[in-house]
Length: 403
Image 1 (tube, rainbow, N blue to C red):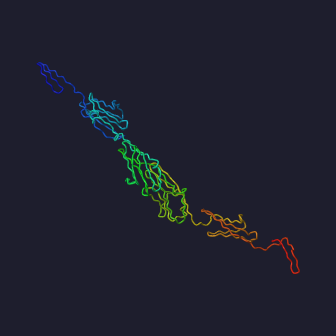
Image 2 (cartoon, rainbow, N blue to C red; image 1 turned 90 degrees about the vertical axis):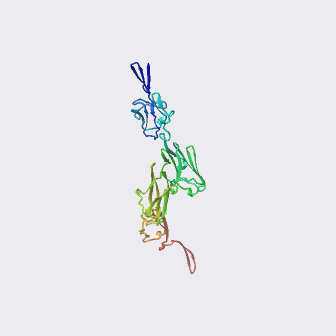
Image 3 (cartoon, rainbow, N blue to C red; image 1 turned 120 degrees about the vertical axis):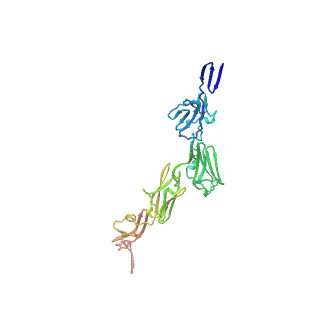
């Protein structure tokens, strides 16, 4: 008589008085599959599974190929728990991962929670990148009624969400405006523009890796300052407004000569959303000089210089007054100069001192010439070529050349 007892993996045979115990080892299985993990590029990820037996060995695979472990990709076993760690996650780590335990394996084909596929929106993201169209790299000057088109090419993974701003505030697309997109190119169209459309326009791109707006190095639009020179009359109020370009908005500082501009109530600067302004009230001759403005942002630094000239009532000449007679310098003259007038004195004049006298005054603002005619009256010399022309009983007629 034979008795068969079944209990799990144990089979007990009883034959007469002999006992035989046979133990069948349970096959290796994955009890808890890996879970999905959300991460970002450059981060460290770890995902794990559990088997039905402690300290067993499992196989990790990626895209059907067994993974080679390294200092960056590490496999650890802690009893039933098996962990795969990937450090400094990169785009190359994107793909389907599978864990194999004996004849059992866990992938997203059999169990969506059993593999890690790094989605573009998490690990394999690319931050937004904005490339400006030619129109947006410089100041745009148009006439009222013209149409303006602003374009930018936007890239990123996932595809960034794009919005527009005007003077730092979200732009509301109103009548006469149109915002369109064709693949990576975003276009803002402004029709029949008026002065109210004047401003600083910004395109902003955002995705899961962050946000990005167009950037450009600082620059100044000096087209409104002829030959970079400002000319004013003494006592005038001078206002020099210069458009400032650059993204992010450059920080602007001013100098006069080599020294930082000392601002007062009379001389000061101000900044608007689109320009920098130099104000000088009741300008004086001492305000003349070189004024430089420096713009700085994360992309660089730029300095431009303008010249300020002041026309004032000329002061006294600093050099000798030049007096000439018919273009020849006078050696025998005595010249006296004061802050307000000049005097020419010639002693013992004779007829040869008569003629046209020129006086020229000069200063930093230019020169001026005046003249005076001098006639000298003197005792005449003896007549020349005396001839008796006619003799009568009562008179004699004489003829001679003038002395």
